[in-house]
Image (cartoon, rainbow over all chains, first blue to last red; front, top):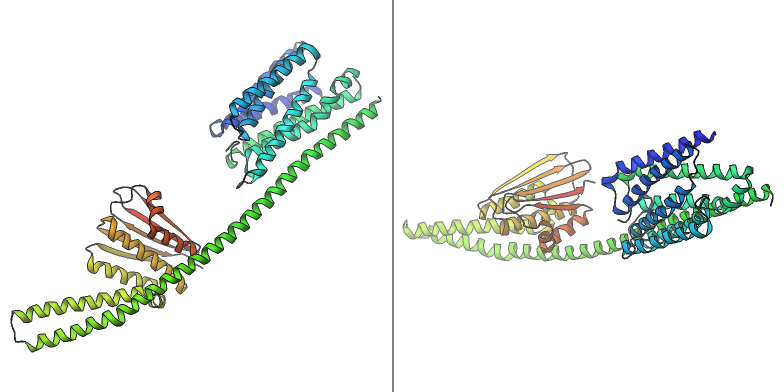
Length: 216
Length: 260
C-alpha cells in the first residue's frame, strides 16, 4: 500500500475511534475517560506530526513530548481500572516517574532529532506488565465474566498491540539506520499494528453499552 | 548481521511474544470460566440445602396448622355446636318474652362463631386446602375476613384454565393468608384486591391495598418475619415475590411463579 494512503487510513481510523470514544463520554467510568482523553491527544499529536511531514519538517520530536504523556495516561487508566488502593496517588507517582525517564532518555540517549524507540520499548514493558497485572486482578475478582468487562477488552488491546510491536521497537534503531528492506517491513508492521489497535478500541467503545465500565 | 537473520529474529520474536499474550488471555478466560462454574455449582448446592431446610420448616408449620385445625374442628367446634343445641332447646322451652329474644340473639352469635370456626379450620388445614381449587379457598379466606373486618375484599381471576399442583396451591394460599393478615393488622386499608392470572408460562398473583403503605419498602419488607416466610415460600416454587409501596399510597405484592 502507498505510504500516504496507509497514513491517511491510519489517521481516519484514529479519528473515528476517538470520535466514538467521545460519543460515549457520558456512559464512561472515570478510568475509561482517561483513554478517551488519550485518544483525543493522539489525534492532535498525529495531526501535528502529519502537518510537519507535509512541510518536510522532522516530526520526531513530537513523539518525545507525546510518548511520556501517553504513558502517564495509560498508567493512570490501569491504576483506576484495576482498582488499586489510592489509585490517583499511584497514577500520579508512577506516571511522573515515567515522564522523568522520558526526559532522561531525550537528554542523554535519544536526542530530539532521533526517534525515541528505547523509551517506547520501556513503555512496552510497563504496559505489558500492567496488562498482566490487570488480568491477575480480573482473575481474583469474584462474580465477573471477563468478556462483559470493558477493562478486559481494553487490556487485551494494549497487551496484543504492545506484544506485536515490542520486537519492532527493539530492532527499530539499528534496522532503520541500515535503511534496508527490513526497515520497510518494520515500519509497515507498526502501521498495521496501530490500525488493528484502533479498530479494536473502536469496537470496544461501540459495544460500550453492553459492557461493564472499567474500574466498576 | 544479514537482513534475513534480522527478519527471522523479528518474525520469531513477534510471534513468540504475541503467543505469550494469547496464552495469558486464554488462561484468564478458561480459568475464570472454571471459577464461575465452581461458584455456580456451590450456589446450586447451597440453594438445594436451603430449599430442603425451608421445606422441612414449612412442613413442620403445616403439621402444626393441621393439628390446630383438627382441634378447632373436633373440640372447639363440637363444644360450640353442642352449646347451640342446648341454647336452642332452652329458647324453645321458655315462653315468648324478653329472655327468649336475648336467647335467640345469643344463639345467632354462637352459630356465627361455629361457622367462622369451621371456615378457619378448613383454611388452616393444608389437606383440605389442597383438595379445593385455589380460587375457592382464596374467596373463602376473603369471606372470613369480610365477616370480622369492614374492608372491601375483591378477587379477580383471569387467564387460562391451568391446574396448579396441590402443594403449589397450598404455598400460594399461605402467602395470600400471610399478606391478608398483614393488611388487616397493619395497613388500615379500606379495600384489598387480589388479581390472579393463569398464564401459560407464568402464574401471577397481585395483592394490592389502599392502606398507609410501608415507609421503606425494602427494609420493612426484609425485617418482617411474615414477609420472610412469604419469600421463602415463593422461592420454594422457583418464583419471586416483589413488594412495592409508598407511604400513604398502599402496598402491592406481586407473586410470579412458573405455571408448569
